[in-house]
Length: 256
Image (cartoon, rainbow, N blue to C red; front, side, top):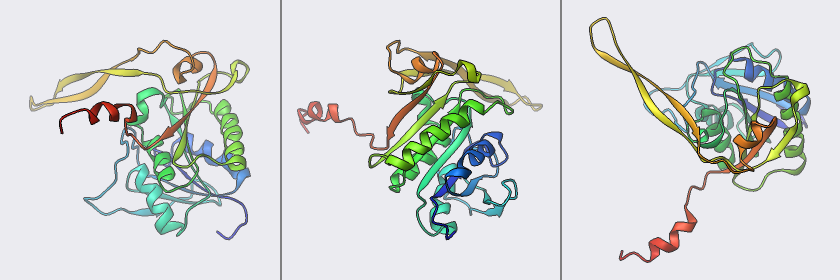
């Protein structure tokens, strides 16, 4: 790890054997020296979880050719932390996460392990990007996604990112001929209407599968969902400061 080329940490939440992270690692090779650290099993929906109740383990992986790679027993955020402090022993020049199998648009960003890895990188002061393809197909076509990765990474390495900001990039599942380009926008105000599929095991005890429907209540333009539906990839600048600044003045009028 002594190259003068940028040092790039690659991770995901679908697990180290997912097609998406192999596509991302391949797309990153022209940009610098890559190190892959990804969960050893699927960690979708883990959000910003970290492992504190049992040990973490790293095992060398040979899925990425000559690139250094490790499978981690923990979450995507664990992967970033271990990458910085135990594998690289320094901060990389860039953290990229994905390419996720499934969209991380709108409020999905709150649940996303893919984006939490990027947020963790931003918290460490590292330019960081999360990439997601709007398809859950394990064998999806990542051709358009790799083009978007190349475009966005080139710009980030050239121009950098504002402090404490990472990028949430979502790519439509369309053919290359139908792809329109990239739009910078905000996340839509869309939400899950949750429900549970209740079933019973062989002993008659109930168990539940979380399911539901996703509703876009925000029909305005310039949102991630708006542009993706029209054949564009969306870029939403994302921050980890969740302070509701507009509400501070109102709360200051309370009798506290």
